[in-house]
Amino acid sequence: MSPPTTFDINRERMIEEQLVARGITDQRVLDAMRTVPRHLFVEDAMQAHAYGDFPLPIGSGQTISQPYIVALMTLALHLTGSERILEIGTGSGYHAAILSRLCQKVYTVERIDGLVSRARKVFDKLRYYNIVSRIDDGTVGWPSEAPFDGIVVTAGGPRIPEPLLDQLADPGRLVMPVGGQLVQDLQLVEKRDGTLTLTTLEQVRFVDLIGAHGWPN
Image 1 (cartoon, rainbow, N blue to C red):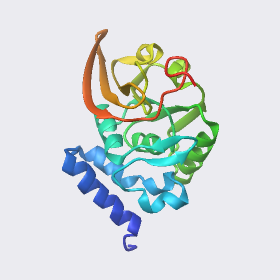
Image 2: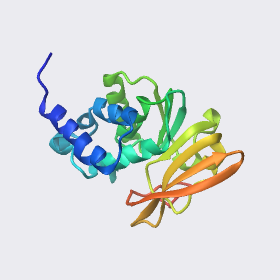
Image 3: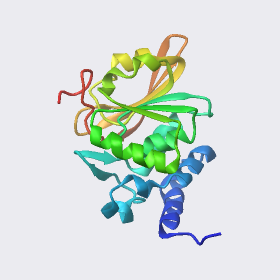
């Protein structure tokens, strides 16, 4: 067995100091965060900082989210392994990779083609073949594959796009940062028997959700 690398050590420290210490104790979520090599989803020059307690730039004005926020949003979906999940905002691909370890299939939508192609290369390298991606306006969702058991939106918008609520299965869960362009509330929407229940999880700051049902470009 090979000795642990610096990345392995930093990833384990991330688990204990950033996740467990903040109350993320779900073993499946921790195992996914422990399994996925976060450093492969950032530029080479950023790899030494990949497991830090902060977001990192990934180009095109976008970021890879802080590990704790990725874990929190994932935990809120209550995944058991059989779900079909829609992700809006592929970005680096890291969050889709985490989700792919916990559900049946991930559908991820990104408006910036360069980010999609880079993420796809990492998915293929890691053999994460249960992730499918497309370049489109994420605020309209992926109607042809709906409904989805869970939806996660990795950008902040002024409101939850109506098409996403329509494409959420019943029962289903949706997580999205909602608010202004400087700060948002991370909101969990639960759909059950045709009724929507809203819970605020935490105050966050995300890049803008651009699109027909988000902020204008």
